[in-house]
Image (cartoon, rainbow, N blue to C red; front, side, top):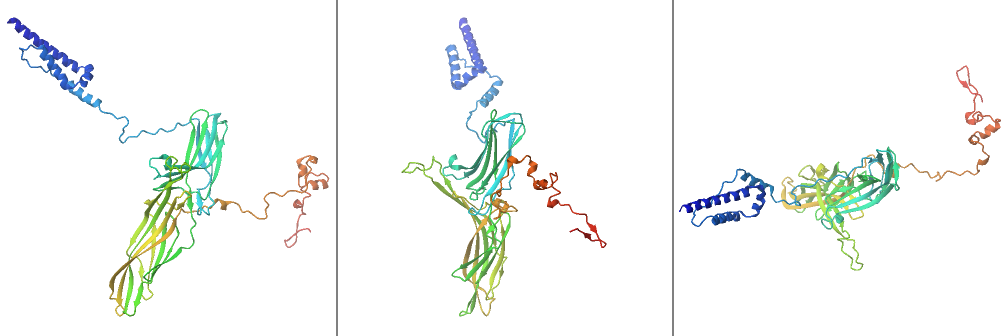
Length: 517
């Protein structure tokens, strides 16, 4: 019996020691990774299995669960925090900063425009273009700076905001080179100073003006690049703002509209050319608003109840397809030139009026009014434009009137009764939205006048000059013959008629000077 008690306590102590060892292994940092890989239920079952195997069948001691260390809960929290799922390629609301190109510390490039603002005066058919000239300033900061090449180019950059194929860079962007310059085509060593390289270009009158709207953006990009022998390239990118200004007529345009089956005739005077920042006025007169019915002994009136005007802007363009997305021709197999037509119309200014006109209902009565309209500053209106690639921007003034019919007896003209008849009169007038010309003029008008009598080259001399017999430059002076006649005198001024010496004048008694004849 005593040996059985000893065996019981011995087996119990062994099981407790095994449990302590397993707990210490789980709490140690080296065994955490292994314990996380195994499920908790499996580890618990393994401990229970060990206890069951070490205890005797006669022992009924339950498995002992040791208390975890205090820092165990904190370690669990840190482990869960440090082992979150991470998606390196998935970013929410974050973008990598764009790295700026490396700058060359030995040189700097800048430009200076010497010409006035580029303005195309007149429409595309009559404009002579705009002259752009300036200088590129290359500042060298060290001696003997070696440059491989130096060039510049001017391009028209067209950006389609609704391209032929979405998410295609070639369909959305097209560039056309206007002119290029090669300032240094061979390797050269430049000294430490600011070097000036002049450039000039004549923009044709058929070119489109700079614009930016919901469908298309057109800009002129000027790019210059200096390639040094060592170090990064020096680049300069600038935009040239090209505008178009149409001539403004001296008198407003007159238009007459008739609205059958009524006798109403509208006479409108409006300006055909308007500016984005200006107040414009158009006058309206309605005739034929009174009709006498002799048989019914009544008078019919057309009364104006409402007038609304709005200025609409229409943009049309053709989005071309690139070579990759253009359909191929069945016969030749080459990509065919194809594009998708895009159009958009929007209202840039509007107003409703219910009063503000003068009405005269006499037998020859009429309705007259004078309306002022202007564009809102936040309208972002785009000036009229027309290019060869199919892009066109137009504007039109829309006037809408609501008139109702009333009648009254001739004997009692104040007893007016509505007839229930109403009509909507709508008119459209084409206007051109353009920039102001200001004080500038076209480049060809700044040139000096050309006279018909002036020959294209200096006149030629009939008698040749005997250069072989001339001893010095002094022999070719205008007083050569006078010098010979005076016996070799060094002064030709005494014999020249222009410098002929006059005798001193004598003053008479009355104060008048006497000049010898």
